[in-house]
Every structure is written in C-alpha cells, then in structure tokens.
View (cartoon, rainbow over the protein chains, first blue to last red):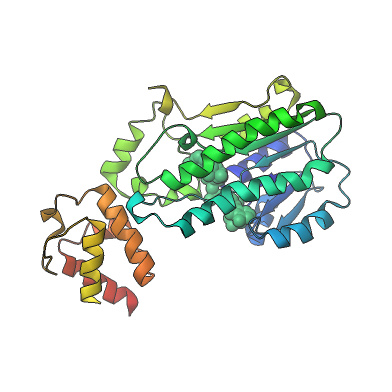
Length: 239
Length: 74
Ligand SMILES: NC(=O)c1ccc[n+]([C@@H]2O[C@H](COP(=O)([O-])OP(=O)(O)OC[C@H]3O[C@@H](n4cnc5c(N)ncnc54)[C@H](OP(=O)(O)O)[C@@H]3O)[C@@H](O)[C@H]2O)c1
C-alpha cells in the first residue's frame, strides 16, 4: 500500500515498487492523478482508492471495504502529507491542529486499520518523515512538530510490533523536487534559491531517490532494520 | 481596505511606529525573507489572495502592493 500515490514521492514509490513486481494499493485524494500514476505502471493488478485520510469517519467506513478482497499486505509506504511554511508569530492552534491531523493522526490511524491485514510471515511499514524532525529552519515550527511526532511514534511502534514480525522505519528527506516544493519561497526567489542550494552538497533530491530507499526498507534486504530513520538529504545535515 | 492593509503590514513586520501607504518596504529593518513570508501569509488569511515572492519583487511601496491586491480582487 502506498499513500500519497497521486503525487511526488508517493507516485515515484508506486513506480519503483511496480518495477520490483509488487501488487499495489494506491491511495491519495485526487482520483484523476491516481489514475495518472496507475497509467505509468506495468502491472494491471493494482487498485486505487481516492480518499481523504484525515476524514476519519470516511476512512473507517471505506478502508475495510477496499481491503476486503486483499489477502494480505506485505508493506506500506505512507507518503501522504502536507507542509506548512508559517512564521511562528502567526501561530494559531487551528493550524497546528490541521497539520497534526493530516501528518500524524491520519498516518497512525491508517496504520491501526491495516494491522490485521499485515502478512503474518513479516511485513514492513515505512513512514515518510522529514529532516525537519531533527533540525530546524525558519517558519517550519509546525511542520517540524508534526514530523517529529511521526519519527518518534514509529520507533515505539517498531518495538511494540517487532514480535509480530512487523518492521517500522522512517525516511527523513531533505528538499526533494516535487509539487510540494515547486512553489516554495526558495524556488521563486533567485537569491534564496542559491542560498538554499548551497546547504545541499549533492543538490536537491528527486522523488526516485526517496522511492529507492522505500524499496530497500520494504524488501528483505533490510530485514534486520526496525525503529530506524534513514536520513536522505544530499549531505544537508552532515555539515 | 487601505487601513486594514497597513495594519497587516505592521503586524507582519513587527512595526509599532506610524506607517504610511507611501512607505517603501526597504525602509523597514524587519523587511527580510521572514517578514515577507509573514506578509504573504496574512494577506492570504485576510483577503484570500495568494501572492508569490516573484510578484513582490515589483512592489516598492505599500501602495504598489495595495494596487496589485485591488487588481486581483477585481
Ligand atoms: N518534497 C520534499 O521536499 C519533502 C521533504 C521531506 C519530507 N517530505 C514528505 O514527503 C511526503 C510526500 O511529499 P511530496 O513532496 O511527494 O508532496 P506532494 O507532491 O504534495 O504529495 C503529497 C501527497 O499526499 C497526499 N495527501 C495529502 N493530504 C492527504 C490527505 N488528507 N489524504 C490523503 N492523501 C493526502 C496528496 O494527495 P492529493 O495530491 O491527491 O491530494 C499527495 O499524493 C510528505 O509527507 C512530505 O511531508 C517531502
């Protein structure tokens, strides 16, 4: 299962998993773009579900129906998420509520609902967190809080479910070229772009860079890894 | 709307002095990337109008911004 499969990192992950021969369940809000992702895949056995994962009542009602004919899940990549660039002095509890609802609650509620479907022989859950979970940038306080919660929650989940052969890991990307970052301030201002790029020894990432790490975490090549975060940031945080 | 915009600029740039519609953004010490980001966010919130960083480059005074907002609203 790949969430956020209608765009960016989720879409690239769907493509990479398809190339590895996986049968996929693709989730996102926009049905048209989910179908567009589907059109790029080689196998015809994949299924899509257009759903707002932060509408918990809808998720409660629709997800079990969607999963009915699915024998089991070998893994999940949760890439659905939103960002926010908001100077702290404009902080509002409603805005924090909203980002926590989408980035944190939706992630873990979905996980709870799929637990019984996980392959008893072993499965792997991957959450896309962010480098902002461990370093800071201006105007990123609320986003950082949400990603910090994802990274922290995943670790305890890894411990709680290790005996059930469920591995849980996170990926913490730096700036990746996706629709999410296409309109960011640093992309529309030359000086700021140069300043931001200078912080990235290997430049900004591409969605495939994250997708490949997802494939690794989903596969048995990482069978001894759980409760870990892979930092994927072109050297940004090594300085 | 003029008065409201001036108050928004004051909030975004942490100004407690008197601000005139003809004032230049560059004349404020707090006119930096974070100040601009705050202003963009407040304009979105109060007027439901989205301005890009690029558009801001052409505004020298608050009045330039005001005129651009009027044009967007129309
Ligand atoms: N791009 C970066 O620089 C970067 C860096 C670090 C971490 N990340 C994280 O990576 C993840 C993917 O980001 P991206 O760059 O690929 O962003 P993106 O291109 O904007 O894609 C976000 C995806 O999440 C889905 N989504 C958002 N809210 C949803 C909701 N309520 N219910 C269901 N789906 C929802 C979107 O669905 P629809 O489009 O169909 O609405 C879309 O498929 C996010 O968690 C983001 O925080 C990104």
